[in-house]
Amino acid sequence: MKAQWDGLTPIGRRDFVSWIESAKQPQTRKQRVESVPSRLASGKRRPCCYATVPMNLYTALKPHSKAQAQWKQLSPDERRDFHRLD
Image 1 (cartoon, one colour):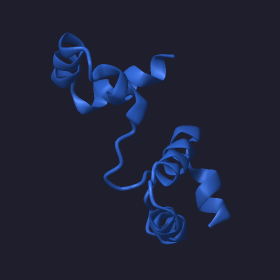
Image 2 (tube, helix red, strand yellow):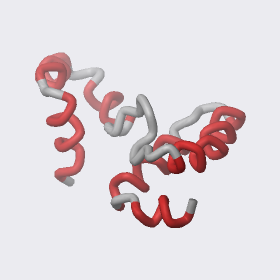
Image 3 (cartoon, one colour):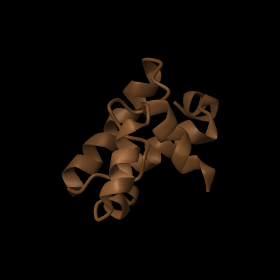
Image 4 (cartoon, one colour):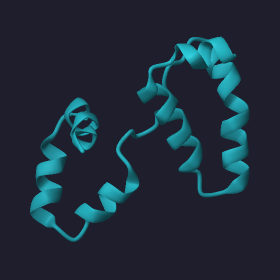
């Protein structure tokens, strides 16, 4: 598994770590940690179905309807790239 982990890009590793840390329940976090080796062994380079945009961005957008509307118009690739501009 270490070779597969080391073969991920830094962004890929960050996405796995963020996906694990984003679990609200300890049991969910544990299940995610336990699933990483099989995901890597099967060739996954990113966690499945994980939004790479941090939740705090959605929280920040919530009170701003104009910003929310603009955000919704972005493609998934634009959304992913947008938060990496910092």
